[in-house]
Length: 301
View (spheres, rainbow, N blue to C red):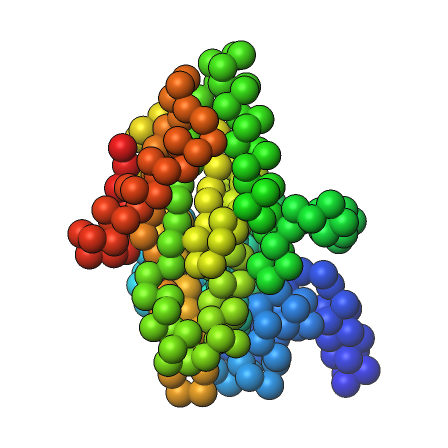
């Protein structure tokens, strides 16, 4: 029997997807290598812990916490014994929110009772930059080396392209100018190494929260720019609020301290008369209005 169990454990450990088991109290009883790779948490850190205890902390695309409510997919399956699939965002050990597709199924005892669940989850990031793409961007100096998203030059190139496309075909787009709230205080209190971790966490959360055809770049310092295509004012606000809520649910833990981050956003739709400078200036001014009105908010104009 031990050989058979070792065989199946070896199979699960070699899956690319994450797999973990929980009992009826949602205590984690198994955690494969795929789960370690996708979440950053080693099995020794999570076995015996409850999945809702500052580990995965699933949220939906509106930033609503699922693990503490009846909305939790595992809770639903424990109650009704039905398998289900959902798309959620987990909390990575490095702090950022990672979109994942999850599949939950019941674990049944010999007499048919639900004694736990098995969850299989996979990376659902809509924009995974391949290693070859990263190397090419580095070669032509369009990649920000710290966050591994496009840099300011990359953003300006794409803005010029979208403005020309709008002028020629009338295809609408907007931009979101994003600034990390109180970033200087983070650097002053925790040091620049932690500040770099916050920048990386922010970039990964933004990339994972955008649609596959949108893009995010680091404009400079703690500022990012998201280029959002095929939107009107309402849908641009929806994208902005999703980014803001996902950042609210992102955090980094240092020892006993948990560092949570918020962002302020200024958003605007492109006008036919816009240049790169004018649309960015307008979004930047709107972002500062969000700062002045209390931070962690979006202002459109």
